[in-house]
Image (cartoon, rainbow, N blue to C red; front, side, top):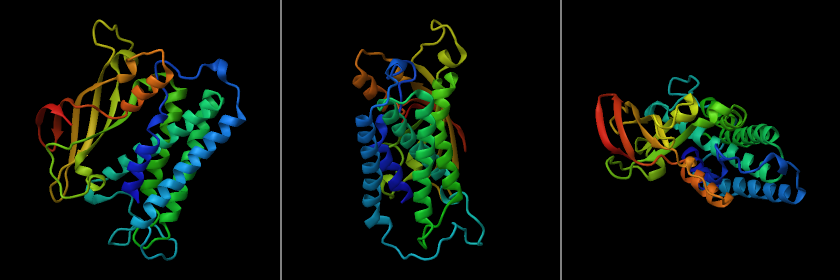
Length: 284
């Protein structure tokens, strides 16, 4: 369920992140609309039900039992999937952040102010994702993962930080996927070695630099992935990134599309620092 949840949330909730440098909803519009609130509730409920129903025939056709926590072969509580060096937790952070941002967006669209919307997004996203983890706890193969639960909290809290701490609006969490160089027999949603998760920062906004020194659309990103080797090794990367949210238009909907696309890290030059040094003209 974990991998499917990640990609379904990615598909259903990418329209969530507020434009960091040009707020979509001015404070003058902070007047709650019951009509929009009901529409927002319906859309969020529809998304959750759709995700569950899509995953049910694939992941939830397995034997059920008593509630239990995920444990390793030694019977100890398992916080990370060691086969992928814990990269699955970065996927949970990404999925949960998208979910939280979607709820935030719908709350703002409904007329709630920035603070109420951000904390509501955290509470609702954490509760929904937590309920899914509890549900997993009754399946023999899955179990309740404490590591997944904590990662979900981190992702849900990301929107709170971005909307309430101005400097954090210069920080983004992105994903890239390599369809070209890395080879794997796994399905797309199962191939963690093809995924790279990035924490990307905008130097101009974060450090208040003069734009003549560094272009305001240029970000510096630090990424993490794993190799296809057995056992997998952690890959640490540093590269350039493009800050699409610096593109301004007069259309709220076009701005929304721009910041939707900005959750994907576009191919750019990068270097791999670990497990060994490799330079990439374009890293996908």
